[in-house]
Every structure is written in C-alpha cells, then in structure tokens.
Amino acid sequence: MLPTISMMNKKEWFENWFDSPFYPLLYDHRDMDEAGRFVDNLMRYLAPPIPSRLLDIACGEGRFAAQLAGYGHEVTGIDLSEHRIKVAKELENERLRFYVHDMRYPTYINYFDYAFNFFTSFGYFEQARDHRMAANAFAAGLKSKGILVLDYLNKTVVGNTLVPTETIIRGGIGFHINRYIEAEHIFKEINLTDDDGLEHHYQERVRAFERTDFEILFGHAGLELNACFGDYDLNAFQKETSPRLIMIFQKK
Image 1 (cartoon, rainbow, N blue to C red):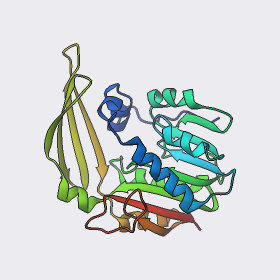
Image 2: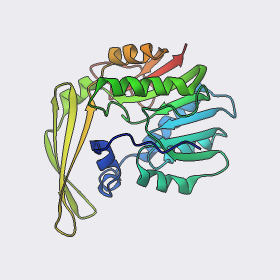
Image 3: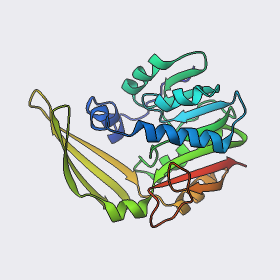
Image 4: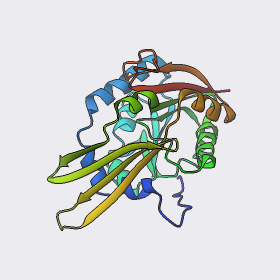
C-alpha cells in the first residue's frame, strides 16, 4: 500500500482548493463525454497489451482511472486530496485501486507500463525544484520503455483567449473569478459566499509551460518526447490554434 505523504506545514493552494466542497461544484459542468472520448482515443493510439499496469497521476475522483480499468488493465490512481480519493474509492475493484499520494514522490519503482496526467494536473508548484521532483517521480514509476501521457493547456491559446473576469453560478452559489498571467504563471482567483454567509477565497495557479519547457524538464528525468497532439481527437499540435498540449513521452 502506498503511504500518505504530506511534507508541508502550511497548506499550498491546491491542497486547500481541491479538498474544498466548492471545487467539484464549480467544475460539475465539465464535458465528461469529451474527456471519455479522449481516453478512448488514447487507448486506440497506444494499444497497450492487456493487462498492462497503468498509473493515473492526480486522478481526482477516479472517473478516468475507472475507464482505463474497463479496458482490462490494472490501474492505480493517486491524488493529494483526501476528499477526492474518498469518493474514488467507491469505484475500487480487483483491477482498480486509489491512494492519497503526493505526485512529487515516487509510487512503486520501475513498475508501471503507462502513466497518465490528465487535464492540466501539473505545473502547480511555486518552486522549480518541485516540478523537477514530480518529473523524476513520474519517470521513476515507469518501467524501461514505459510511456507517459501528459495533457496540458496551450499557453499561447490561453493567453489569447483569457477571460479576465466573470461570475459563474453553480448550485445557487456565485463564483466570482479573476484570471491573469503574471511572472510565468496563469492565475485564477476565486471568491464566493457560502449558504451561511461566510466568504471564501481560493486560488488556482499553474506554470505557463510550453512544449520546449516540458522537453527539457522531462528530458532531464530520462523521458523522451515521441509525439505531440493539440486536442482530444489527437490532431497535430499547432501552437497558435490548438486548445491542448498533449505529449507522449517514453522512458529511455
């Protein structure tokens, strides 16, 4: 069993936000059909032998780990949020297990055939060393010639289409959102008042990484970029127009 790891005395933004009851409420509109097609497309492209050992890094509530397991694979899902993993554990079966775990630290060593990091679940950290730690941990968990799929935002398109302010109503709660780019990070400030009249402030922050940044970062970890796609239908990546930056790395 994987250990629960929490090395920080002060909670970081992603610990506060992802463990809050408001995070799943704000994002309950996400297009699960589109995301499900993305997983299907990846499975057709990668064609992993059955059964393979798969790791879903930052798995959230486990929907896509469960979909991967449905192909007959042995899937492990990890996430730092205790609340999200508690929900995910309701999906567990003989091929599917979930653990609270920090992506900056290795899980099993040289164990997985494939690892997945979906939906911009990277770039969270303030310090460059933490991104290096995470990249090294991703690589350490893979067998030789193992595959990492990393799905990230496209910095260029985000910068050109950023909506600075908006209010979104979910479950009767107004989420007042401010977005901006500063010091190589993309920020989302979230303010809301709950049903009891209490005010809450949360922040999302990801590093504005580009393709070359990932090639260098994961190259130092022993992973080589083999393919790059620009959307969930796996069309070719176009820097000026692609909504996503989806990279396929292989362990050397």
